[in-house]
Length: 322
Image (tube, rainbow, N blue to C red):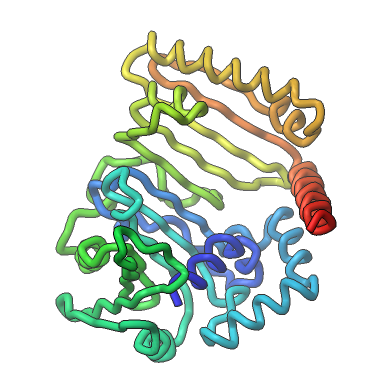
């Protein structure tokens, strides 16, 4: 159950969230643990009326996508296009297993519980007034001969998923107000503020990245990173802010970022990458390095179309070789 729900919600959640009610679902700081090390929020309701959202909605009219959505709705009694409002993913450490996913939606609680109970090796436990459900997903790879369990709980119109029971329990405590949350914390203070039109808000701190990652150098030099994406007046706006230990370190971050941007502009075989790179500006303000992207939303749609066409051609070519 969870495997399919996560895949459809995260991979096509943006696509499926384009015919939602008018009430927006911005990041709810009180629903995120106060000691969160990283978070990602998608406001599905705010996405719907944008130029990019309307394009994605048109993509959902394609027969192959309608079939997938119909299959999902038939299984879960849940329409992603009309009942998904927002998705928040956060963790209190760098370990992926500590992360929790909170889905805001209008769903049939009894139906979801029935599905969970029919899953392989279903178990349940109590946590306060809530029930934590768990099961084994055959599609997950076993670790040391043991298949990992999926844990989930329902609180109001929120479904919480996690890979550890302790993570889900703590998330329930946060929602109940018995554990600290970002609403009473200075953590990621610029995110989740009233009145913004952000479709995506993300941030991370205490980052521990592997040395083998060639793109990690710029992040390893930063104390924290924040990303916001949105659309206003038919323009796509993106902003990333990296905070370093000092002005000097920030200067190193700026140099690396400028180098990466210059390389991106040389990728003439990928004109969409060049278009994005040319629309980016990078500046430094003391210990902060800020990158901004402003581009007509129609241009972003064309980039999305070109990327989709390239992937389709690659898939078709691979199919021909089989």
